[in-house]
Image 1 (cartoon, rainbow, N blue to C red):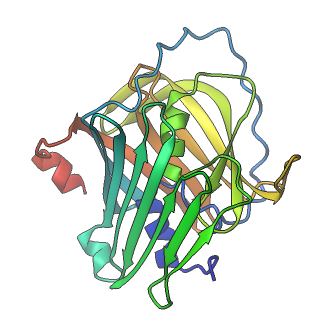
Image 2: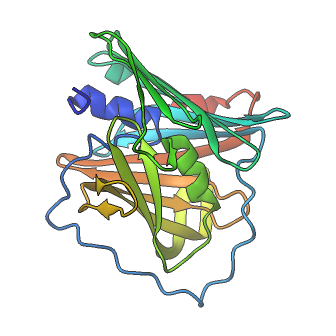
Image 3: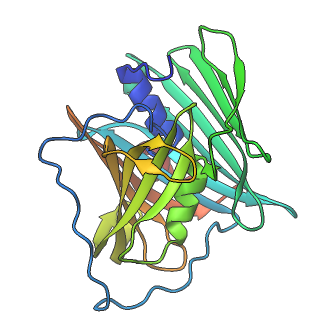
Length: 287
């Protein structure tokens, strides 16, 4: 039930979670996609400490599938006295809406230490809405309401330190270059997945928002857990995402790409603003 897929579902997951959510629906690894080589450190200048998440941040993205523009997304951050809320909204453009319109929103709330406290995801696919949420209590709980079935709630007793995709993105932005992979347990279904982040090196990256020298390049591998408990057995990759992050204190997610059988998915940063500001005419037109 949780692993049913369609072309609309693949697009909606990508919109709703900056391409980091669909662990259970990851495609098979392409035959020519070899394991990444460990990056060598020492020749590049050190990065300043990461200032993430930054209150009032508003990032605007364009989304392309197989090279064609299909929609846009915005990532915003707001804080209050006790927590920080990170929200992602995304939608298909007018041309795609004619065939299959998708609207999505995802929100995570982080405590002062950056740990996730709650997560909410709603996706409307061509008039059919489904919702899911996570509550990170002493025993994490998952709520899921598919569009054509009754809602249900389950305790995730087998999970150790689960997190949601948006909080994982925040954590990835905080990581410093390292030769050791970093593992994260991501919960979106009753099955847990390991998201293994590997540093690939640095390179200059150009996106709509500008040119960023020496950006940090990460590969996030999706690996199903075969066993959870005192010992953890991680299976082979079922998919991966390549993420480029700026090397300054903002650690801006510049580009997220993922290969599919029919091409590639790409999310690229188009504008950096402040939450509450109006988007420029160029930014609106680009979406």
